[in-house]
Image (tube, rainbow, N blue to C red; front, side):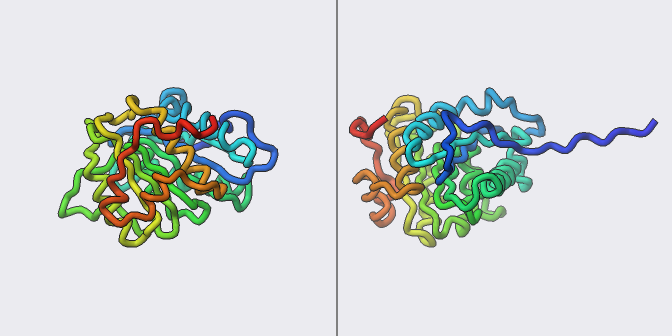
Length: 253
């Protein structure tokens, strides 16, 4: 009896969060977290849970601008070394956005491992901005090549990291940002004092910061003054910008 070939796994886009606009003029791709090594398929519900609340907020904020927000569902739970599966899936998702909506700007919004995927896939021609929340990054190894940053040239990039992150060292994201800043002045990094990996303690401020950045990069809205200052400041000032308590209270929800 002939042996059947295993089905080929494919990444996919979740349905647009909120009400999908009739005319899409910008897209957010949400990239969830994952594991360092795993060949298992992620649970769509569990994987999306870490980004769904933020995605709904962004969808509401950009409804009148024509913003579509989609979660990217990976083929595998793991990063899986040099395979970098989530980064491949993020690039596929950007291709799919071009196929569906045409030439519209895309912001990659990733958390944890998804933040690393966003950075890696940031060089896609459709991507104009990258938002990396609590990026999961490998420990630096002199024998291994450093995390790539040249692909971020010409993109606006915001990294947000809690200073008490127990899962990934915030100093690693600072070093990544410092290297990227040499090739791209439009990068900034905010530190959330005493917050942990999930950024629960200052979630409203983090979400407001994300909204401000996404609406500014995709639709040209004016950035809040702290974001403007962080983008303009030379390192290390613009890469260790403290996220103030109460940030965004004046923003419309």
